[in-house]
Structure formats: C-alpha cells, structure tokens
Length: 167
Picture 1: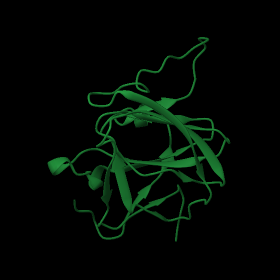
Picture 2: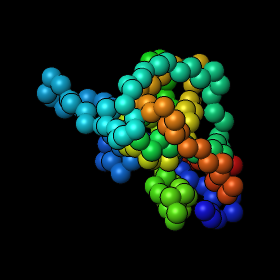
Picture 3: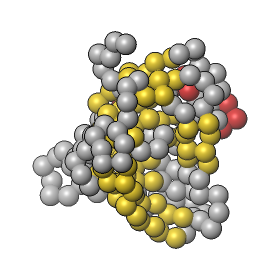
C-alpha cells in the first residue's frame, strides 16, 4: 500500500457515473415517479440481519482532510442518506494487491446534502466526514454475527482537498 509522499486528491462533485465502480448514488434525477435502487439490500452469507440506525456527526472536517482510516464491509452493501441536507465527503478506493486498498486509485467526491450513497460490499471507504456540522445520516446494511467490518489505518500520507484548494 504505497502512495506518493504528501499525495493530494482533489474531491470532485458526486455523480452516478463517477461513483458507479464503488456503488450507487441515492438520488432521483429522472422524470419517472420512482427510481429503484439495486444495491441497498445486496448482501452475501453470513450477513442475514437487516439493520438501520441514525448516525450523528458533530464536527465538520477541515481542509486538507487526511485519509487516516478506511473501512469495508465484506458481506453487505452500506447505505448513507443525509437527514439534514448537509454536504459531505465520500472517499473510496478499490482493492489493490492482497485485498488492501489501492491508494493510487483512491477517489474523493463531494456529495450534496440531497444525495445519499450506497457502497458495494467490500468497497474501501472512509467514515462519514461532513462539510457542515452537526449532521445526521440514516444508515442501513445487513449484518452478520461477526466480521461485518474491516478497518485499516492508512500509513501513507494522502490528503483530500476541495477543487481550487491552494495551501
């Protein structure tokens, strides 16, 4: 898991096309009455217990935002839906060598407060980071009795910055 020293990743606006490799954007952009989502209930054994909760974030992130910890959920997708219309940062990375996150392909997105995200099972992502606090999110996933979460401290120096950041 190597990255360039002091590597900076510029966050881009969250779009369905840009995020497709990592999951699904929870929003409605068409003219149909409903937009059905395919990922929020996707799971594999041993995950079998649906769960939903509300998470509260009390502190807004500061720029640049270092990537210090990534997580993934091997058996279930995980969905976040903002409840306070607060924009937030979405940081994701595909698998690299040996299943660790490939930090050279790490991406960052700025989600509006009207967009949710649903991470595919096994996608490395950073925990919730909001641009305006406090903020609340509805969170849904399917749980197993153990092994729902994998966490990895990021040893490489990777910072996320917004577009036009110049410090």
